[in-house]
Image 1 (cartoon, one colour):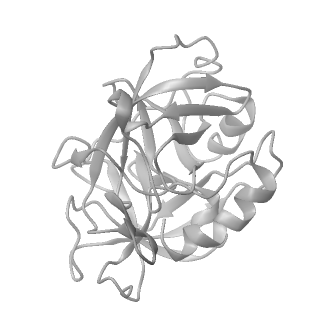
Image 2 (cartoon, one colour):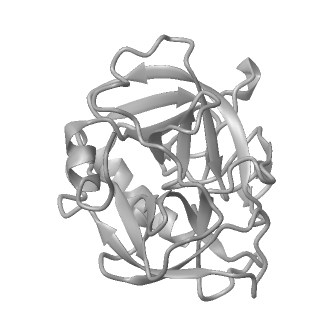
Length: 251
């Protein structure tokens, strides 16, 4: 996450039992064309580190892009890129941001989900699939997830504190299920156990079920230095489906 994500960190402390917000892929690798339906939200002003993207998300229909509610203001006009390595001037797609009206909700259900309704249909990119109703409640403890996003690819511990490195490149990593509750999936991103995960800038990005094209959950928050847990918002719940049902046909 970048500036928008850092602002969310304040909210996250209040509504989640976690510190900080998640936003980048760590212990991962460049995605290339593996997940062409995963895109990034483009900031209109370049950041001090020379990057432009601040949140991630996924195309779920030709005209609907799924992301997190904390990534923009409801009703705002936003731009999206699907380039695997974005540079200023690359093609972007315009749309209108629509957050769940119940956001920010509570610690039990943050309602931190949103869509961008695009001005024109996206051609040549196959949308990702959504999970069936309550299909994630009985996942095995060794269930794997593929996290994808444009967030920080590395966190360094410099003399002045932690530094988060960005390059606007879409990346992916694999993590293992830690815990399941009513609206959240907690996914291990501990590199010492071979896992990878998200960091600042990956907010709203998908966590695919294993190697499938089904998005189990979207990245919302995690530990402050992106080393332990990726906390993700389930898409199979009654509340998530009630919001999404207004924009796409659900399985």
